[in-house]
Length: 250
Image: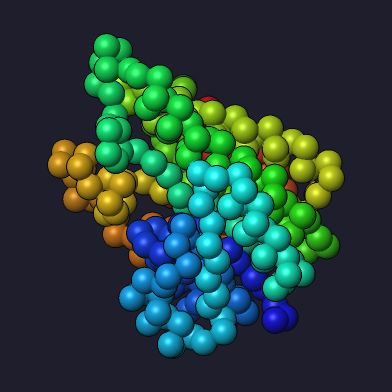
């Protein structure tokens, strides 16, 4: 399929699904691939598939598995010669046996490693395996969703040890990759993005004190993130931006 091609990891729900919808609404994107842990399409993706046909494709990818990421990259290379945009929206904040720590006494090695695997290791392995598809003669963007709580310079509240540390590690890993990729793939821009507090399952237990003007629906977050991406230049690579285009301190 000729034309611009985007890959959204975590594209079956939340911000990822909203990004898929927004890209499909833009005719410059000839193909959008939605990647998720299960090859089974959600009702929302199935409806989009009915509307957009072959412009929407699916891909099985589990960011918690190196083998799955490598297999997904191999499968995508067999379908398409190049990617022009990759956004990794996958992340882990809470789940069975995992919740943000309020005190140092709550910190456990298992939670730290589990968060690190999804929020830091997964994104850099995605960069490793998909970078060849993003390295070509046209502009391309590799973006991963981070979080402002991963900023060391902006940390004034404490707590959330595992998530903060994993997101800080993600930012450092992506920044380091951007330095290398700037030498080898000068048209590839590599950034971390903070989407704000979005009405998704990830934020659901923790947004009770968030004011209405700072709680965004997924469609708004997707719109703002794509606007930030559209405005990126080569000098933006390696940096960390919020949904409003402002740079977030490391």
